[in-house]
Image (tube, rainbow, N blue to C red; front, side):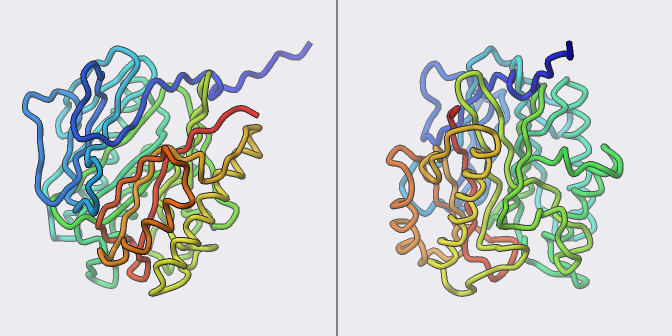
Length: 340
């Protein structure tokens, strides 16, 4: 009799939760907290990972992204990396000061990724599940490259050095968004067992982009599915009005929103179909961050977006710069899927 092949992702207990809050609720066991806003906010005597991302909050909603654990947590700092871990998941955070020089910035990105990859593996959580990248001046240019292209090259070099030449199957969901203030902030989730990295049927995989987008293609998957005994969580990468690899609908924020939502829905529905789960489209989204380039566009974008979501979806609206100058918004999300 042939042995039964077990899917390691199916055994993954997903003992973390993400909510947007104003303050840590009583009884919560924090893994990490990320503050958004126009000026620094920090809590005293915090031992778990914490960072400030310099993005103005466009609405009155809570502005703290809080990650909590259902298991006991241990926290530690090694150099510029602060991390917290429970039995199954590691949450880490790297924060560095602002640098304007492109070569120094690229070296810092490469260092950050080398450190987080080494840490995750050394601590026994070798599978990256989700990464967030924030830094100012994402569209600044020097020597024919913009800062995002330089970021992508530094990230690629660190990942290639760690994994070797063939690493695309290990790339997790990710976002890279431009801030208005502050320095480089990278935070991430890693697991003891792997998630399922997903691509979008409407888009070229980012790691296969043609060279017009920079010397090294962006190193991320469109989404990562993490399985749970009770629910399945899909982390959706930063998503914009891109079909294939080309931007669509310049100067039309509503059309860009519709294209972005079509991309998100395609990723959720294709994941549900191919993984044998029940799909509910955009209504499966539980948390969503909308990065809006122009503050004045929020008045038309917000009602159009929220009319497509479920009533319990938490939304955080932030003023941010996007990696391509023609893109007016980017959306990332977390979706909760159920077994069919």
